[in-house]
Image (cartoon, rainbow, N blue to C red; front, side, top):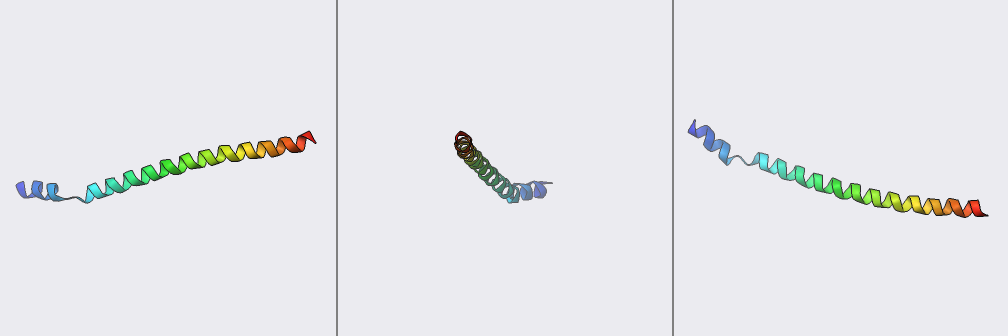
Length: 56
């Protein structure tokens, strides 16, 4: 039993998977934030263009 616990204690493969998952999560949050910001900017640009055509 103590050999099994020692092997479990020395195993770090799960920690690496968790680190990769955290990095992927942070990257996805940044991408979502950037896409939202770009989407809002594009919406404002197209609204202004549409209003410009409607006024003339």
